[in-house]
Image (cartoon, rainbow, N blue to C red; front, side, top):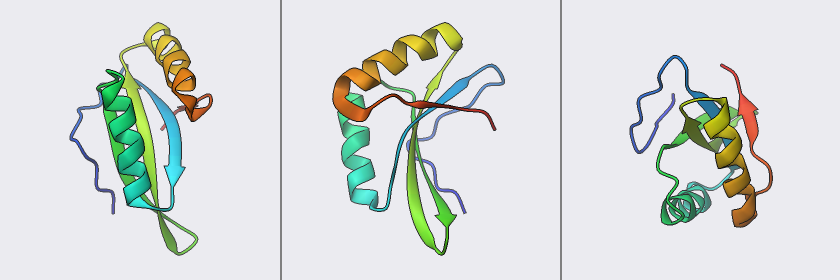
Length: 88
């Protein structure tokens, strides 16, 4: 089961950037708050089962590739490392 928060609508052309995965929801929410404080608004926090445990995925949505590239630079500048482009 996937629980996303806050709710964001994913459009057909959106690019998803995976910022990080966390074993702890608390750590994921802290990272989400850091992104929000930096003005990065279109975020997704979802849970996924992996090897019998729950991981929390933190992703950012971008309207297009150019915006995703700019956001990736901002995210890396916050100390998260380079986000991975996700294609689902």
